[in-house]
Length: 417
Ligand code: SF4
Image 1 (cartoon, helix red, strand yellow):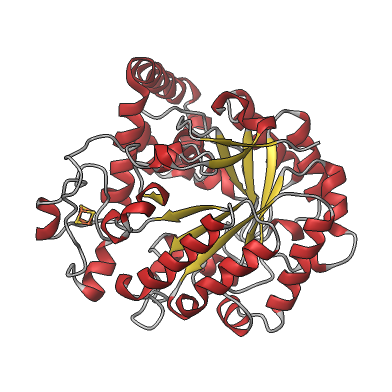
Image 2 (tube, rainbow, N blue to C red):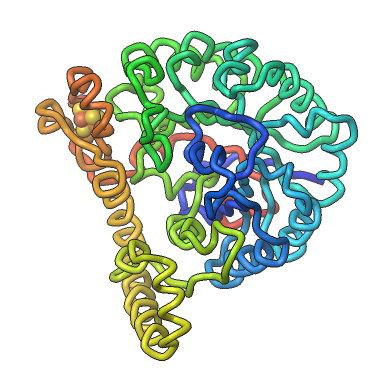
């Protein structure tokens, strides 16, 4: 029996993430991995083996202490051994979520098979409504199938959450996404900015696919109000805090807020599981490490070199990882929040080139907001930044989000209730 609870306790998430391989039955132009999905010879394209996926899950559970996991492909429902993998996660105490486009789940009986295998919930990718959804995911008829899938999931009594990427064509139908979420009884909706991660750099972010923040805000504000009125949790990811209406600041998650979102991923295990060896079919796994001094150096190293080096010089490489782990363990014991906050800032500034405009200097939220994405600022400038001055200057990333009620499953969030 699924027990859903509401909580305002903002503690570190213990949710991990795994990518099985970049193989997919859709072609969403805003996909983080679209180039490797289209390139069948890319080393990250093919699905890994069930045994390798299980090994990754074991490390998330037993080394990183994760309690739940988001399983992604590409599209994980076309991974042949997905049901045994779901069951394995359930058996080791790692509640499994599938992030899915829903095409396969439109078939009768499939959702029930996941129920029986022990799925926790589905995070369904609904990128628009009607023809807009079909257009942005590159599959005619996809909306009809995802609608059928949502019905099937609901009938199988499996909780639903929804992801919606706010690329430009989707903005006019954001409220329709909200209506659909309410209709199917979704627990949560995540509205995600179309930001430049990984393959999204490759010419797919253009003025005609990236909406201006000022275009997004009216539709987004109305959608949040509709969803909250209906009791659905709403999370807005990767938009500057000054775009939020005051009543919606609690819903906005920048990098510093993300580790406290129980539906988001633990920075520490995330950093390990997104290293190349953990995302590809061939080869073994990387040594484990913790966030803290040296973690980013190891992450940024050439993974294959590291792996080969570890085989050639296991002692030296072993010492290096052992030293990093010891230092990081001490740093986290002393101040985990500081370590995670440093990581949040590195992700914004180093990984995504976030930038700030003159308005930000006067903003009271400047220490907890990421600012504007660098390439967004290049497209459109920083004119939309509005310094927030109606609250005291704060250094506390949880100042607003601690007012948000989250809908969680008691089975893997008992520690957060
Ligand atoms: S720091 Fe800049 S981008 Fe962030 S809320 Fe303030 S004005 Fe907006």
